[in-house]
Amino acid sequence: MDEILKEIEGYGIVPVVKIENAADALPLGKAILAGGLPLAEITFRTAAAEEVIRTLTERVPELIVGAGTVLTTEQAGKAIRAGASFIVSPGFNPKIVSFCREQGVPVIPGVNSPTQIEAAMECGLRVMKFFPAEESGGAAFLKAVAAPYEGIRFIPTGGINAANLISYLSLKNVIACGGSWMVKTELISTGKFEEITKLTREAVRILLGFALAHVGINEENAENASKSVELFSRMFHFPVAEGQGSFFLGEKEIEIMKGPGRGEKGHLAFATNDVSRALFYLGRQGIRPVAGTEKEEDGKTILVYLDQEIAGFAIHLRQKG
Image 1: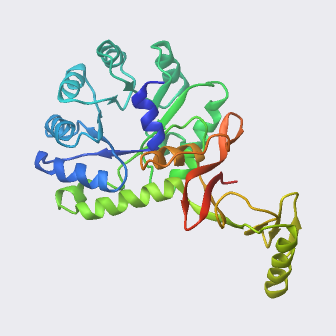
Image 2 (image 1 turned 180 degrees about the vertical axis):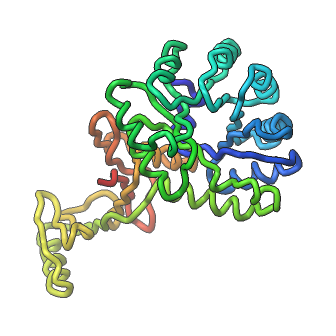
C-alpha cells in the first residue's frame, strides 16, 4: 500500500472539508492539528479549494492534505500542483485515475457497486472510496462484498458521524472513514475553530475507544498475593479466579500477581478498538511497543506492552472484544 494510504489507515478518519474562504485555511489547519488529527481532504466544491490546499501544504507542513470531489483531470492537476498528497473523486472516472497514476499521486475513486469495484480493480486499484456510504447500503454492503473482493479495501464517506463511525471501522475491509461532522462548513465560516478542535479531539477519542480493562498489582510472592486476594474478597465480596501466575477478582477488573511482574508496582491494562491504530497514534508521541510482548491473532496485534510507565505501573493495550 502507498505510504500516504498507510498513514490514512493509521489515522482512521479523514476530515472532509468544504471551505468557502481561503483566509480560513490556516486557522482551520491549526485547529485540526490541535485536535490530534493531522489530515484533511479539501473538496473542490468551492473556488477557494486550490488556494486552501496550497496554504495548508506550505504553512502547516505537519498536515497531510488531499483534494476531494475532483471531477476532472484539470482539477486534479490544479490540486497536485498546489501540493495535494492524494486525490479523491466521488465516482469512478478512468481518466482521472490514469492521470493521477501517471503523476505518481494516490487516487481514491468513489464506487458503490460490484461493477464499479471491478472497473477500479482493472486500473490496478486496491483502495476505493465507498460513496455515498449510508445511502448505498452502509456497513451491510461492505460486509457483503468482503468475501468476493478479498484484498479490496474502502474509505466509506457520506453519512458517517460519531454515532456510526466504529460500525464501519470495525470491518476488516475498511481502512478509514471520511466525515465532515467535526469540520462543518458553518463552523469554519463563523470562525469557531476551538469547537473544531474539540470535535476533532472527540472523534479521535471515539476512534481509539480507550477504556481501563483491569489493574494489575505486583506482590512479592504467592503467599502475599493470597493474603491480598482474601482481603479484597472479604471486603468487597469479589469472586476469585486463580491462574498460574496471578489471581483475578470480580469480573477480572483486578489482577494480583503471585510475584514481581512488569512495572514497579504493577500494570494497567487498557482496552482499545484497534491496538494497531492505537500504537500508530501513540507512536506520534514517541511511545513504542516493548519488543517481544506482542500477542497476535489472524496477523493482527491484539495485546502489547508499552515502553512508558505511569506512577510505577507498566501499561499494556489489548483489543476490545
